[in-house]
Image (cartoon, one colour):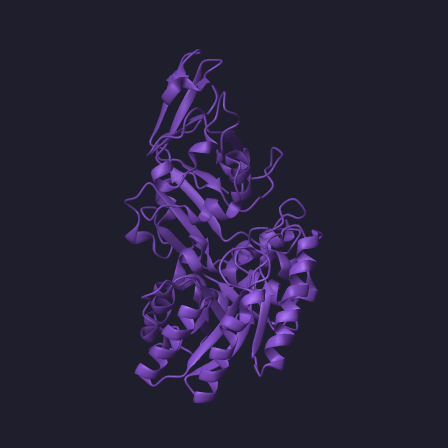
Length: 421
């Protein structure tokens, strides 16, 4: 629940380096381990690639990756070459995990990736040429995954154009410069499991697989399933599943199931310390444009987080709609209030009500686990913030700014409490 005073955070691992900042994203590595174990149980015939791109969805690249591996993942997935190299530089070696990186532009340093024993994805003819050149220059055999666009309309070789790259890959494999280890694709509507496009993409994927194998491809892994498909479509698991959001305890299908329904525990808690609590009269306009006006004599609390920290401006509260939810108060009287008025660059305002006992320095929670409150309701989650801002929970955690310290903790009892809630 809410920690009443700043000083009570002392002693938490990592706290000494961030105690001067008035907010923090507390990331529970035990939750990440638990979530990966749960995902592995949902896909018993497949290996697990934990997707740790975008600084592990805002949770911290290296600590999150290590926790995912401790939970049973044997692969790590990242979008950018720099992320893959950062993992290797941090000591996550080939014996710890295969690492796949997939979003490249001409000029990417494939040689550095091959030297670091990173698997690379190719999605265009130029990429095949560049990977082969890097393999020849380094004397390292490139481990390559061919990305096929089966209907998403994003990165990848169109299914009908696979022969623009497949023969070149197989020729390079015969020469020893390339090993074609994987074929993969990505789903457009996996969060709607019954949508006809899901089956249609599977049909295209299977057709390309059959074609590639007839042509001589000897694949180690075939992979299509993201978080949603890992949890809802076992027929799409193939050899490897690639959960991302679910690794961090958020539901990829919030319209169908909560994290708790899926056996997941949110790993991140975003909290901040009140800068000011002050009394105002009824009729006081609050923040820019006075979207919100107090209806009674009340107390306003200033939270030192704003859109520069990644708090969505679309979660402003007042005439534009209910603002983002914030948990305030001590454990025995915790309650949820909403952002009052416009989200500013560095701060937001809460209407704490006329009877509040909150004061400057007290800690409030923007989101975390949806724990039940003694007075009814539940603590706010990243999904609640997504709903308030008309977006998705992915964006809520990944957009958090770098000036918010990440404090990594390891709290098995918190996971147990969430499982039993």
